[in-house]
Image 1: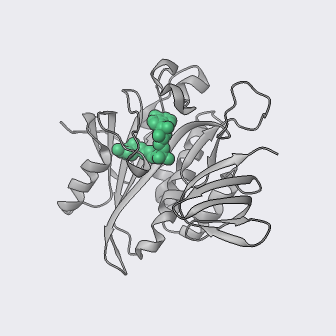
Image 2: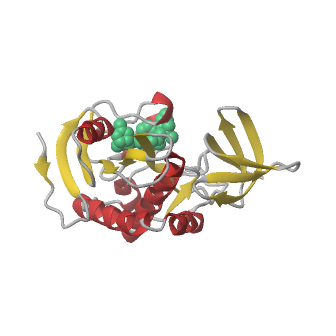
Image 3: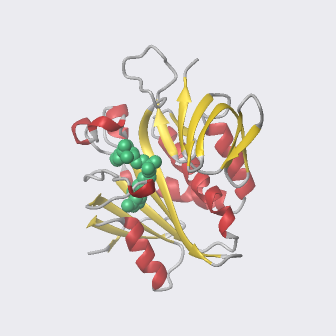
Length: 257
Ligand code: BT5
């Protein structure tokens, strides 16, 4: 059952000990007409990633879906995902963890030391992933649910073993105050959402991807080259050597020289 989270945050917060998926709960709240509400759970029993992948959501995480109804066209939705990535990254840095963003939706730690045994193919250890879902007409979003999975107080043994994952607990060696973290994420997001172009610029400052050689698996094939920038509302510009390709969706890997 949902209880109030008792936060002084810019959004109402509905807290659950356990829920199937906070994104599903946000969808139900949207159908009931709600707006500007965050659903937070300690545990999810069927957390989802993109493309119906499983999202491992044991107790101790911050599994959060933020329901908003911005007056924007659906094409602008990616900017909200980027804004959330910036908000999470800033809150994690305040908690003492050097988090950076990988296009489009991953918040990672590490990846800058090519010889480190801890390092991974992906270019870092994944701390957070974001899945934004929405409903709307051609010209206007009806609602957006920005689903954010942040491995907060998850013990290393409880992280998905094959997924190059990490948690704030693993990185800091001590737990974080999850209430404070949720509050800071919501405050940062609230600041960013009114200036989406500014949010996309802030994304570029916090991102690792721009300037790297990347390999992106897109729905229409693989794009490889140098990531040279981000374009509102969220396309990655990749210089393939022959042309500049705008990539709007896909899985990105940072390539080492
Ligand atoms: C994502 O998908 O990164 C989006 C994850 C969104 C989760 C949130 S939690 C709140 C809300 N409610 C939901 O049901 N979902 C959202 P993607 O880029 O497709 O990455 C998924 C992949 O990450 C999986 O295939 C695993 O390899 C890996 N993975 C799964 N669980 C993980 C975890 N807890 N930490 C790090 N990596 C994980």
